[in-house]
Image (cartoon, rainbow, N blue to C red; front, side, top):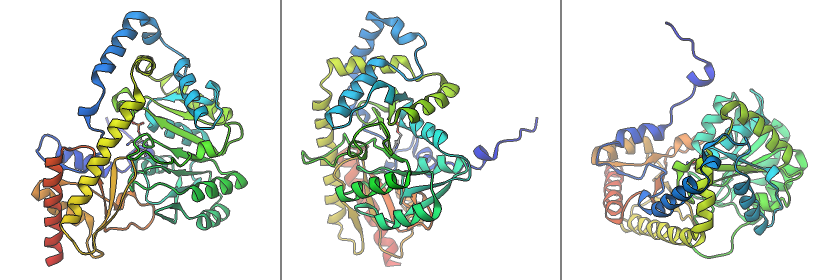
Length: 398
Ligand code: PMP
């Protein structure tokens, strides 16, 4: 049998990160490469109790087929959260999905045709770039800095390229850890609203905020209400509870949500009702906010440790941006250093990280790298940064 595969799938690049993680599997590699929350911090006991309650009290709700839109109570809880942050949303403006990755996929399916242009903050989430590529979209990078996409460039590109959407991770982004400033948020919303360009606000990390401080409002909440909003908000319990529960959501204009639900129906009927019921039970019995404060504080501590270690090696030309939340630290290496060549050298020393190039749409900055600081204990982090610094110094001495 000779199979003929679709260009859409056959042409997809396998993720560099996955390839690196495959290398790391089973070995004792010190890895800054993954994007995983620390499994030791999962609220296992509370999840176990929630699952037992769900299966004891109302097993049919968790085990029977359910509506495509997902569990009503969970959607109501999400609407309550949105209301507390200033946006009125109803369950009809909310769709539960299999992780926010599926929400992204459904939004793209609902809002684009092959050949359309999409604008992205640059650099950006690798799996979003892969998805856009798979759907035959032309990805157009918007010039971006530490405070987010540049409004002038966004405006020029909207007018020249007539994109079908703009995608970004405005809070504690992946891969950069960056957070768009309040002014940029307002400017981007205004531009997109005026030009009729939907914004996909991908927001998996905002609950992981290291310090109690004033929060930037989400683009979604700045836009006010769902009806007629340019913003489609994508959220997830992956970093708030556990990614294995595969529960995410989309919120936005009811028409967009309805279209996404139609696409979802053909794809998987609905997401796991059991996972959704476990989350509903957990939200009743478990102090999620306290838990998130503790986990965020711990991740902030690990980020500070990583920064201290990086600084202690005094490598000229090595810079990074200090994230205020999330899971990643974005490194800029000395100018002449190619992060992929450096990776080959660090792998020989037993250390992995992700080179920055694949996260760029358009011309990559090859001297960049993403380091994850949530996955390892202090001892391994210190050892890993030491070996990484050693490898950089060896390159510079050549
Ligand atoms: N968006 C971004 C920016 C991410 O980093 C991730 C997780 N790596 C996702 C979406 C998908 O997360 P999930 O499907 O687990 O909700």
